[in-house]
Length: 118
Image (cartoon, rainbow, N blue to C red; front, side, top):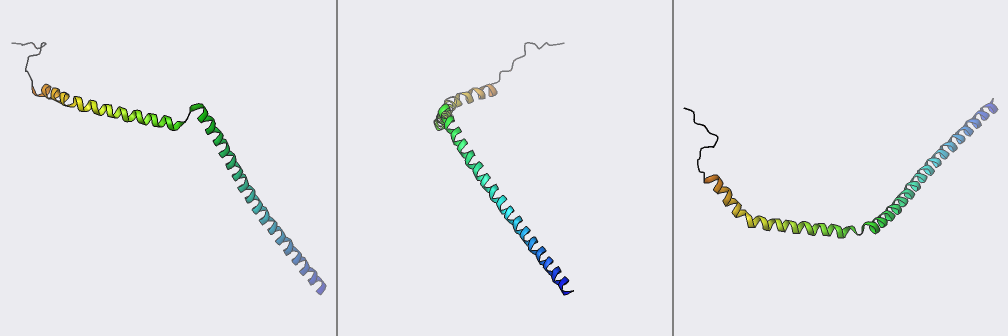
């Protein structure tokens, strides 16, 4: 009877060791999977940065530097605003006088299509 109980104890201990080994293997597999995922993400990021750099290089060769274009557009915009401001200041007073004279200096006249009916 004691030999049976010792045999059962040994089986239980062996089962526990096997279970522990399985859990440890699962943990190692999870860690390795996580590490492989991180490595893959890093590798894709490096590849993406490399391709973007090559694209920007080709784009700058084809289109020329973008900063010069932006500066030129900004300069043109400022110049156009100055021109519009000068034009506004030049013609504002005469336009206001003309508008006020049209509103205030009314000359009552009978419309040409008006018919007097008796």
